[in-house]
Image 1: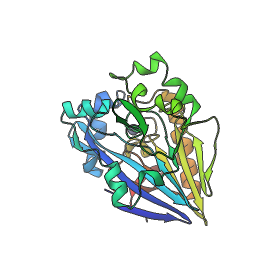
Image 2 (image 1 turned 120 degrees about the horizontal axis):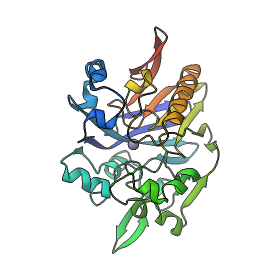
Image 3 (image 1 turned 90 degrees about the vertical axis):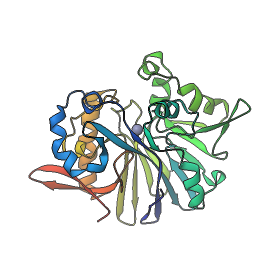
Image 4 (image 1 turned 135 degrees about the horizontal axis):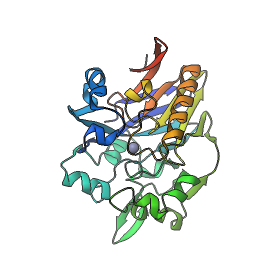
Length: 296
Ligand SMILES: [Zn+2]
């Protein structure tokens, strides 16, 4: 549902939900070091982020950024029905909504050829699903004019057997590797600007090349945090690691660094997986930081 269309100065941010998934594994598997009862207050606070008492419901959100005549899509979601992760979720009856990205873009008046850049925060399968389409066994770019931009550390790590072994299916060869052959791949090695007012910053831990997007325009600030935070509870508990955080110590540092920057800038936060509205601010109470959903 493209229910959010906000301006940060001159940068327009459109929130697009590709899928909503009820994770089939329990919370203490998802966050191995967090006792199940520690989730009790968060269940009350964010009821829509739980599918059942013991499982998460995650939204798969992509963002479209428009400024100075440029159109940038941040992440490409779960992907079509044949995407390996989509196949797994369908077998588990886990997807409540799915396969919405292209329809939602169309509903917003955006054609695939309008997208000039696909920026991938990282290379997990729920962020790269719509990168490519298949026709007659051939891959083609879903967004035919776009450069697909990703951090080199993720490109390299996700092409190792060690990283591929962490997930029960091969999706890199399906959604990611062909980008190079198709001439669309652009690898980043450092922080930098994508467009006026839009800067990307390396926020590793969840994956080695995870990046966030910082938007600053006309004195307003926003940060797309990707999967640095998967659940709003981690805004208060930055040491709660998910099973998908590859380097936990680095993930803690990244969460703390992001929290400092967000509060210093009074930035609006856009998350990949938080429950609707997926947008909010970080507030301080009793020396702790909390998620406050909404734009105000
Ligand atoms: Zn994710």
